[in-house]
Length: 264
Length: 317
Ligand SMILES: Nc1ncnc2c1ncn2[C@@H]1O[C@H](COP(=O)(O)OP(=O)(O)OP(=O)(O)O)[C@@H](O)[C@H]1O
Ligand SMILES: [Mg+2]
Image 1 (cartoon, protein in one colour):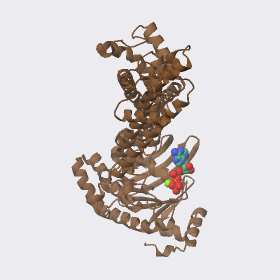
Image 2 (tube, each protein chain N blue to C red):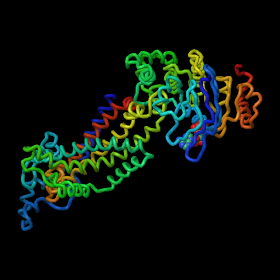
Image 3 (cartoon, rainbow over the protein chains, first blue to last red):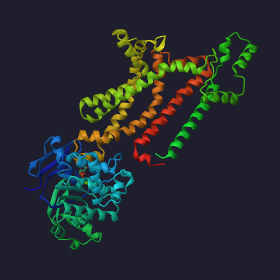
C-alpha cells in the first residue's frame, strides 16, 4: 500500500478544467518534486489532496491516503487527517499566519486539535517546536505576533506548524518562493533535515528546477493541468523527453546551474 | 499600546472638540435671523430690540461671547436659553433621558442584527437565501429612515395596535413600562436603518476573511471550515467592522434626530429642530456641541479599542 495515491484527479472551475487527470504516487518516507510553470495547477493539485480547494472548485478522480479514499468524503471526515496525517507548508508565510494570534498559539494549535493538549501544554510544546525549527529565543518568540518576525522566521513558524502533529506526509507548496535568496537555502535545508528526522514523505512543489533537484530524487513535471513527465530527477534532467521539460532545463542551465551537481 | 499614542490621540480629540465648538459658534452667527426679533415680536421698535440684545448679550463682540460660552461649557454650564432663560444643561439632561436610551439600544440592536445576518449572507453567498439577505440589506439602506418609521407605525401601532405610535409619557420614566413601550418602534426604526448599513460591512469583512490564507492554514491544521471561521475568522473580520462602527456613530445620531421627529419623541433631536426655528443660538450651539462631542469621544474610544485589539496597530507609535 502506497502512502498517497492520486489517480485521474480533475479540478474544474465552471467550464475551465485546471487540473486534468493527474496521477501521483508516494510511498512512506518518499519524496516527490512537483514542478511546472505558474498556473499549471500545482497548488490546486496539492490542495485537492486534503480537501482544501477554494469554494467553486469541482473535483473528481481518486485520492487515497493510507489506503482510504478521501475524495467525496464530508469535510468532517477529512479534517482529522489534515495536520495529523498530512501537514502543509504554504508559499506566503506572512498571509498564511493569523495576524491576531500569538506565534505559540498558532504552532501549538495542531496539537490542541489532534492530541487534545491543554493551552499550557501546547504552549510548552510550541516553544520546543520553535527551537527545533531554529527560531531564536523560542520562549520569547512564542509570545510574538507574525508581523514582528522576519520572512524567514515566519516560514520557520510555517514549518513548525506543519510538523507539529508529526504527519506521515508533508506538502510544501513553494515554501521558499516568497523569501530572499539567502534565506531560501536555509529554509530548504531546515525542511529537508526535519523531513529526514521525522521520516515523513514529502511532496515538494516549485517552479524552480534547481530547488526541486536539491530536495527530491523523483520529479513530476506539470503543464496545463497535466503531468507531462515523471521519473528519477537525474534522468529527467539529463534526458528530458518532453519539449516543455527541455525548455525548463535549458532555462535552468542559462542561470549557470549544473544538474551534475545534484545529489543522486 | 504606546503612551505616546494615547497622549496624541487624546490631544487630537481635544483639538477637534475645540475646532468643532469654534465652527459651530461661527456658523450659527452667520445664520440670518435674530433671536431678539423673535423674543420682541414683529412690532418691537429698534430701541426695544437694542435693549433686548443688550440683555441677551448678543451686542457684545463675538470673541467675548465665544469665550464666555466655551468657558461655561468646560465647567458643565451650557448657558441659558435666549428665549425663556432656562438652563441649557438642565434642558439637555431632560432630553437625553429619551435620546440616550433610544440611540444606545438601537446601536446594540443594530449590531445584534447585522453581525449574524451579514456573516450568514457571506457564508451562503452562492445560495438564494444568502443573496436574499444581502438584497434585503441593500433595500434597508435605500429606504429613508423617516418612511421606515411611518411604515412601522402603520403596521404595529395603527393596524395591529400593539404599540404606541407617537410621543412619550409626559412624566418620563415614572412608569418605565409605558416609557419603554413608546420607545420600541423608534428603536426598531433606527436600529434597522443602521443594521442595513452595517450588514454590508459585516458581509464584505466576512467574505474577505473567508478567502484569507490564514483560514486555509487553520483548515490545514485540522479544523473544519466552520471551526476555522470561529477560531480565526471572527476576530479578524471584527476589525474592519469595529472601525466602521466608529464612523457610523455620526449617522446614528443624525438618524436619532430624524426618528425623534417621526415619532414626536421629546428628545434632544426634536428640541434641536425647534430651537433652530426659534434662533435660540445658545441652546442650538450647546446641543450641536454635545452631539458632535459625543461622536468625537465615541470615535476616539473605538479607535483606542481597535488599537488594543489589533497587535499590528499596537506596535506602531
Ligand atoms: N479560485 C479559482 N477560481 C478560478 N480559477 C482558479 C482559482 N484558483 C486557481 N485558478 C486557476 O487554476 C489554474 C491553476 O492554478 P494553481 O494555483 O494550481 O497554479 P500553480 O501551478 O500553483 O501556479 P503558481 O506557480 O503561480 O503558484 C490557474 O490558471 C488559475 O488561474
Ligand atoms: Mg501555486
